[in-house]
Length: 287
Figure 1 (spheres, rainbow, N blue to C red):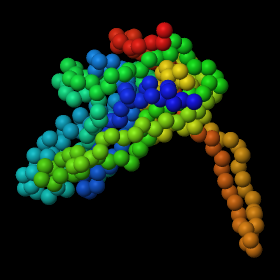
Figure 2: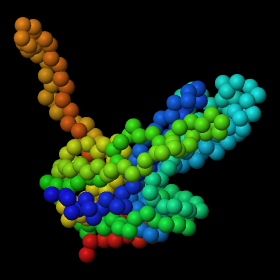
Figure 3: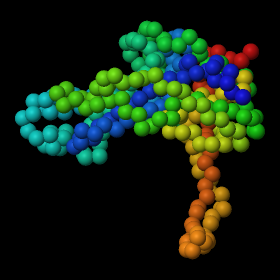
Figure 4: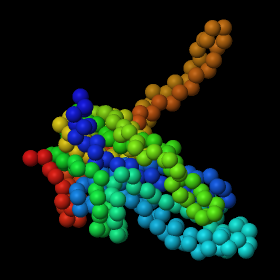
C-alpha cells in the first residue's frame, strides 16, 4: 500500500545519534532520533526534544573542557576533580551528537523551537554538500479520521556509535561504525484530532505507538505527501482488566492482566507549514 510512497520519502529522512557518559563509569549510553532535510539551504525539521539535546550537549561539552584539562593533568583522583566542578554521579559529563549522512560541512548551527509544541527547526549555516536530492512534499490539507498513514524513521534506541577514549578523555566514533541504517516504516490509522495547550487542533492520534528513535520522522499518506510529524506516544486504559484463575494441566494458576492501548501522537501538516512560514523556510507543497 505504501511501497511507492516510501520510495518518494526515504531519502531525506536521516538519523541523529547521541552518546553520553556518566562520571564514574566508562560505559557509554547511546540513542537515536530522526530528522527531515527540508531543502538545499540546510534547514532540518525534527522534534523539539531532539533539538534540545543538541543545545544540552553544547552546554555540557563547554563545561567539560575545564574538567577534561584536569583529568588529563591527572594531579588528583577523578572523583575529586568531578566534585571540584560540581558534577554529581548521575549527571552526564560528556554528551555528543552526530548527524549521519546529512551534510558534510557547515560553519555554524542554529535552533528554532516552537513556543509550546514538540517541533523545532535546525539551520546549518553555510552548508556544504547536502546528502540527498529529494525533499519532503507537504500535503495541501490535513489528513482525515480513518485515513491510513505510514511513519518513517529509525527506531533503534539501543544504537551506540561512540566509545570512551581514555587517552583523550573524550567520546569518539567507533572505528568501522556502519552508519547505513535501514529506514523503518510503520503504518496506522488516524483515529482522532487532539487539542493542544492553547486549545488548537494541532495534534492527532493514530493506531500503534510511535517508537523511540522514530520520533522526528515524517507521517505520510498513500500518495507520499507529508501529513504530520511524529512526536511521541500515549497509553489509554481500556478498563479490560483480567483477574481470574485458570487451569494449566493439573495446576490452577492466578492470572492478572491490565490492558492498555498505545497510540502514536503527531503534529498535523497545517501546523507544521505555519511554523515553517513563521521562520521563512522554503518547502515543497502538494499542487
